Length: 227
Ligand code: NI
Ligand code: MN
Image (cartoon, rainbow, N blue to C red; front, side, top):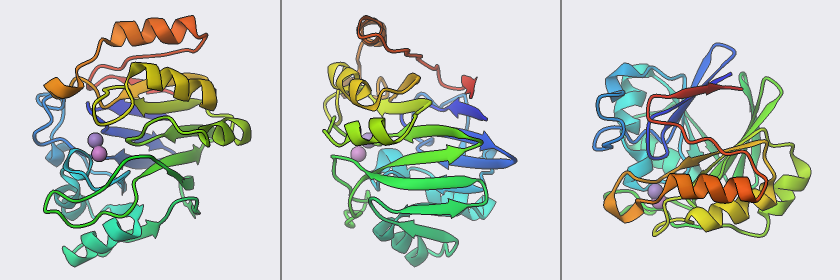
């Protein structure tokens, strides 16, 4: 399984011949500029954590050109259908669904969710993905919350992806707290440095993670890792 980071909260998981694209905010994402553009990506699936513009991003354009299945909460898939894209799989918090490429659970996330045009986007979510026997937890935009400990107890998370940028989500200290609850084998940070309001020192975060006894890896935009 290969995971490629495109900056902000956008990343691609390639597993067993399927391409899963999370939160494809590429146009207007300075960290994606020169690395990837919406036209380059032909995912089989687009997964949205919530409807904010820095996550919804290029979803409709990419879905139209690739015919990708859009996986998101009910409000987001309904919005996609109203905008002419019918290949959707609606879910909601706590629910799981089996796909040809693996099993997905929508988790709680403590945030908000509305589309750039102001349409209500339902509740924000994270995703627990099980594919090829590996568990990936993308927390989505969130603060730490105590039920993350249940995820840590119930699932052997191989890789956690979580925001560290502060201001709109948890910051570096919050991400260390979340990691203590989730206990993943590795944590990769998201949602930082894209805009002045979410600039943080990733080295300091990595030091805090090391001091707490957790593995951390900062991926540069375009960089990938294998699981
Ligand atoms: Ni958001
Ligand atoms: Mn965001």
